[in-house]
Amino acid sequence: MKHLNFAIVVSRFNETITEKLLEGALQRFAERKIPTKNIAVWHVPGAIELPIIAQQLAKQRRYQAILCLGAVVRGETDHYDYVCQQVSYGCQRVALDHDIPVIFGLLTTDNEEQAFDRVGGRHGHKGSDCADTAIEMADCIEMLISSSKQ
Image (cartoon, rainbow, N blue to C red; front, side):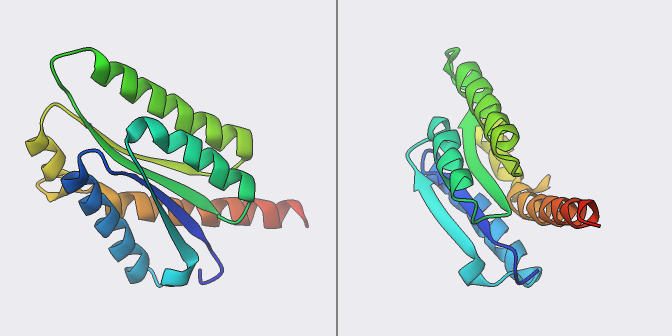
């Protein structure tokens, strides 16, 4: 796995939550023996900006997977629904357009308590889960490519 490279795009909006997502992902990569030099981290202002940076990173063809980490907490307006839908669609589009796993690590919760429950609280750690998913998907694609060459 030392040959695998990963990019992490993390939103600064709701930073107390998103930085915990990032910490969890980086910790899991370390546990899985992915060298720090194989991980690039990019910060963006908010969740809606995650897909455009993921797209630019995908075009570079330097990474085996891209993690998009963010947190959208429901408010009193429909803004929450639009942001969640657009980020989900954007990440999926990047993945399919560029043949690269784009891991959707966007917490979509009703309140901050629910978000904190998902960054090391009662519901596990979504940042760690995203790193595991990125590694598994990178390995899976690598195996598919290897088997198609035989």
